[in-house]
Amino acid sequence: MVDTDCKRKMVSPDLPSKLHVTIPSPFKLPVSSPISCSAPSSCSAYELYLRLPELRNLWLSRDFPHWTHEPILKPSLQALEITFRLVLAVCSDARPYINHREWNRRLDSILTSQIKLIASICEEEEDESAPVGDKRSSLSLLPQLATWRKSEAFGKKILSTIDNEMRFSKYTLGLGEQNISGKPSLQYDAVCRPNELYILKNNPYADHIDNNENETLYIIHQIIESWLHVSINLLKRINTRVDEGRFGEASGDVYLVESIWKLLTEVEDLHLLMDPEDFLKLKKQLHIKTAGKNDAFCFRSRGLVEVMKMSKGLREKVPFVVGVEVDPTGGPRLQEAAMRLYARKGEECDKIHLLQGMQGVEAAAKRFFFAYKQVVAAVMGSAEMNTECDSVSQIFMEPTYFPSLDAAKTFLGEFWSHVG
Image 1 (cartoon, rainbow, N blue to C red):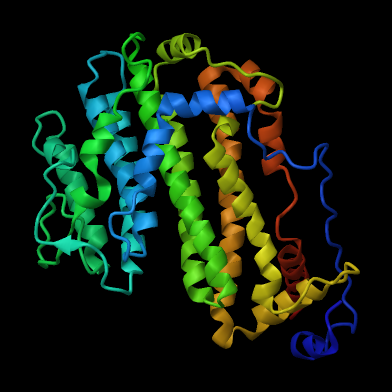
Image 2 (cartoon, rainbow, N blue to C red; image 1 turned 45 degrees about the horizontal axis):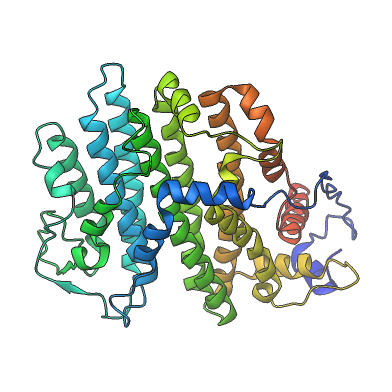
């Protein structure tokens, strides 16, 4: 039940003084936490295949120590540059049975999503420490894509997208876009290091596995891992900003994390465009197999597991946001505080946006794992899905991470259903 003050504000005289609401009980799962990494040997093999130790060094490099956005923007730009390499690989693929039209559509959508994310990150920069100048990139693959016959139309479309999405930022990316407004250009080559990324273009099996899907798989997962690293840095910044009471800024970061989860789902879907026989042959060539019933391939990514745990951990910030401590007796203290917050609005809208964003992250993360399970079935067959995906199913079948917010909305929904 809500407190007396809340009743006076919310309950209509036409309603009974007590409103009984049934809150669904949580669904009980057979395991305490399905979010855990695969065996260390499997994780290490995955990381060595993707050359993650070398890629991680590029993510973590600090060339501009006074630029606070570098830890977030650098790996974002590197993910974008790796996607340009995927475009080049698809356009260069001479296999007559590849669906080039659908590949181009999907890659256009993924690149647009990434550019929107990068633009959002750039827009919130308030300091003047970003490394900018008047030179364009000479090392990125995008200018080459915009002039090569097979990819010219695609490259020009991406340049136009950059122009459009970066219009609210203080600077542009400097990749050859028109930049009609004459804004300064980011020192893209110094920040992104495209030449060092290009050195990592081949995986350890490139020399002795004759399979085009080897390159495709390699690039797709490098893109995923780069954005996972961005998410980790954003989630750390969210925790810091919430602790400092900067709820508006934290809500902006939360919505970025939600968008990254959606992007990861879109990138995972690219597996559906890989040739079935070539991919399954590659699976055999790379000796990819599950070690047990709950050994999902996705859990070989330590980054994915960490991002999922940190996304789930956002619930720990709810008491501070709503301004009360958790009731040790299990009472509805958090629920009542959330209801008062939703009713007051006013100057505390930033808190509402933050809480909504947290629940958006939960929904996007669970959708990712639900979609992952379907992709596994479509790419490798339902038998493989049944073997490895029990732990994945447990993630999207878990009860809500925010039971107090869920209960508050359930009560409010029941209240308004009786009004009028």
